[in-house]
Amino acid sequence: MTFREWLRASAEPGPVGRLHFGMRHRVKPSRNDAIWRGCAGLGLLVAWVLFMSGQSLDFGGYALAGLLTVMYLVVGFFVHPAPEASNVGWGGGMFDNPFRFSDGFNRSLFTLRLVLWPGRFVAECLADIGEFAADKLSKPPGLGRQ
Image 1 (spheres, rainbow, N blue to C red):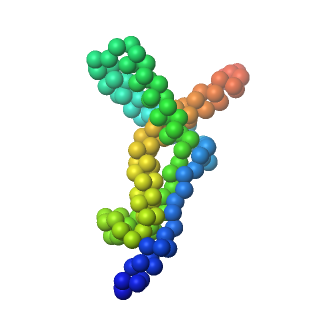
Image 2: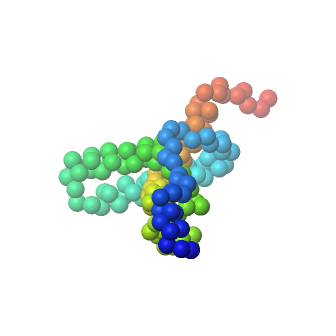
Image 3: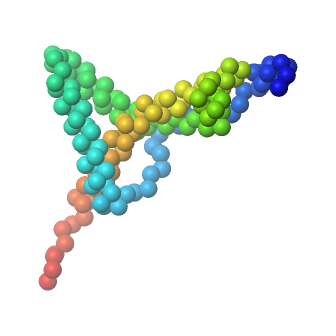
């Protein structure tokens, strides 16, 4: 590749990903999947609460940690980074392409996706358990066997 081609490549950015906001389309899980995923999500949330309770914070610190945790779960549930996988640098993202700024943006989206993934997992697990409980509570109790 000549020097002119390198310069032209820097002026022509590659494809970039997007940030999607809002609820994503999710397939309603089966009852067993909702229960298992809900237990996993609640387990992670309980582990985080136990970790935070071991810290030596005052009441304001715990309130702030709780508020930040809720905000993280909400952002993880409603923000969906979608990097363009074909433009993340050289060697499948191992090396930065210094002649394209767009691969840096895609790398940032990929990093944001990794950071938000645990929050999305826990929030979706809680949503699945909430939907499952709402379905069970909204149906009138059956008459049972006769």
